[in-house]
Length: 142
Length: 81
Image (tube, rainbow over the protein chains, first blue to last red):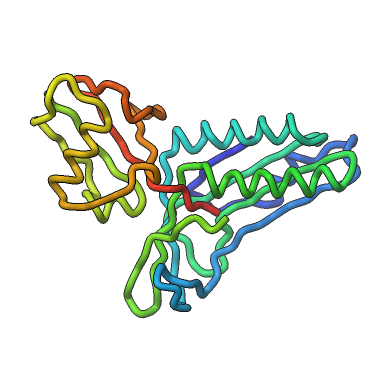
């Protein structure tokens, strides 16, 4: 399952979707909005909030493709990824990836694959708003 | 020929935050023709290798032909997560 949401991510609800009695473990990644980042000129800036935007139709299409790839590449039981868009504050969760599998190695690898591919390929962009009043579109950080 | 163009991410700052209707597109024209025209109109230089075009909400190729009333969009590199 892959989703784009404007609402707060519910990690417990998502975890329920990957739980499976066949699985011996579950790996999860939560991406949060942090209060600092390097801007495009490599200056360390205090971040106030982020604004994510997506092309929802194509983001969902590419996201589902990535989930299908993960299911093919790794021996996993379930995987789920949700990305939030809109205005996010410091500490808000921007992305949640969870994978359950019989064994941990496949779950770790699939989780990282889904996260990296989502950052690189899903049409989502983020605009950082800094405490000094400036803002800037963030380049992919892979 | 009249088409609509739309921009995402940082391209909104370089072109327009809102979709732009263009009536002066020659016929026939490809997405590359439209992008070159936009760069000329807005006096910006952008390497098209970093941009993914879309046509009517579907991923497209630069040499796809553009038709009357099409919506052509341009994606900068993704930066989610």
